[in-house]
Amino acid sequence: MSDKTPRDARAVQAEQRAAESEARADKPAEYTGSYPGNLFMVIAPSGAGKSTLVNALLEHDTAIRLSISYTTRPPRPNEKHGREYLFCTKEEFAERRRKGEFLESAEVHGNFYATSRVWIEEQMRNGRDVLLEIDWQGALQVRKQFSNAVGIFILPPSLEVLEDRLRKRGQDEPNVIVRRLLAAGSEIAHAPDFEYVVINESFPTALNELQCIVAATRLRCASQYARHTELFMQLGIHLPQA
Image 1 (tube, helix red, strand yellow):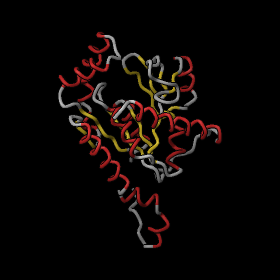
Image 2 (cartoon, helix red, strand yellow):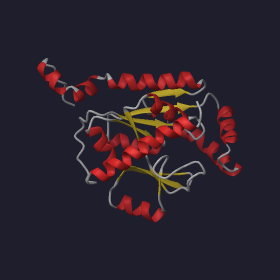
Image 3 (cartoon, rainbow, N blue to C red):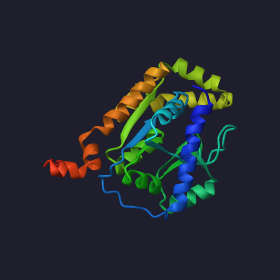
């Protein structure tokens, strides 16, 4: 898959988000636990291929909305504000966090990242599935508030392959690569904290497995009930109380 296709998918969603933000008042909504939309969290050590897999998933499944995180790290040459990330200063980040605008926040490799609470709740309330590209710390924070969130951990086939991918992508200085590799071990240790693990050895296979997880989640009884409550009630089907 060319680089152009994934960027186009993100660009389209960035334009949609911009239009939606102009059309709504940015007011928090209380989470009821029964939104018709699903929340997916994709977690991986740097270099495991998380972003490439997510880009391909978005290209094939337009029903999923990608949540764009706030970050204080500088943009890379091919990145655009509002597409890969919402870039901000540390001062702006701290102010938004103080106002309670974030669902979760974390420091990763010396930079801060956070997820917008308001946007995610609005999407799910309107029946849209949302996907988070997130680190394990943030994912566990999200899980405390969205117990039905589905965690998918992407693993490399080996640490040697992980190192090779980091060096070949040419985005980081050698000292940064060393730091990422040192962090990878502790990050990978948290894979058992999540429901699914995808080993990204063969890209087509890994993408297919990711798509299967999404499809299966949409067919869970709770998900179907939230989307088709009237039908379930007509058929006399009631979910057990938690």
